[in-house]
Length: 327
Image 1 (cartoon, rainbow, N blue to C red):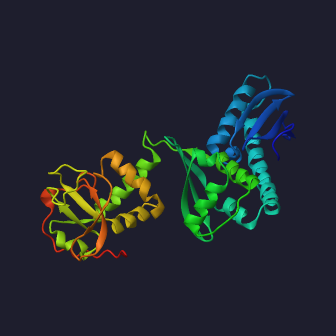
Image 2 (image 1 turned 120 degrees about the horizontal axis):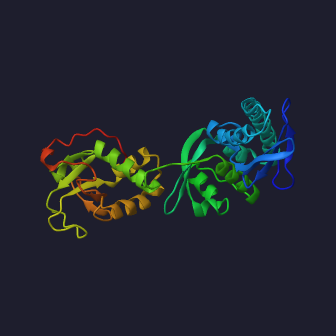
Image 3 (image 1 turned 45 degrees about the vertical axis):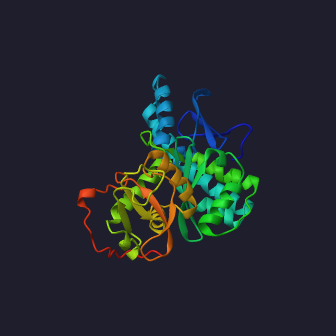
């Protein structure tokens, strides 16, 4: 099926129903006619052929319209229409797969075939499209802003390079095919007002809070990446916090480790730090200090609330955590 033109018409055997099918901006327009009269017409995602939720919208509308007609078995017509949609969907998928194999490169077909559906959409400023993709035997989560989705294939080229270390050239027609497939199989995720960036920040903080070992002795910080100095009166003299602020100094290498545990790459760290500062979880940007072993390291000034640190429960400790993270 290609966009534009008159819909293809199909008669349902044993009924007076005919179905018109026409592609429409990455979706599909379905028109049901009974005895030549239109009883339902609407645009649906392509999952109407396979997913119960989308499919039932169309089936219920047709059945309701047929119930008002005399001598029509509306329930029986619905059953036949349901079977037809499933069969047509299988044929359309086979046809589309054959077209892709001929029209697009091996890499593009791998992207199309390796996408995990549905594509999750998180509303916000900006709205985020989250695509889980298996490519070259690895699975990663790629995130796109609405601007990137509305742009060229350059955004996908960059994310493929960052996540899979492969350099591809994605043409305009190829990008449109990929994007239309993603848009046609999207799912808007109800986050209760939480943005995608908030969700990432919460996951990172949860991983950090579960993993860090707060120590009161600054000289023990470098004993393990997960050791974090509990600076109860801002002895470090960090100017972005009040003079008497209680700061949990987390090592930069450990933050990166937990960022990756949350499914993000190190390139996302800058955005994460901005989000944590704006949320009040970080007092400010990182600082480089020579503490403990004399090596100059990056430390991030977290609040105790962000990492769920109970100051009264922090003892001296031996600082002998066992996390293995490269410096």
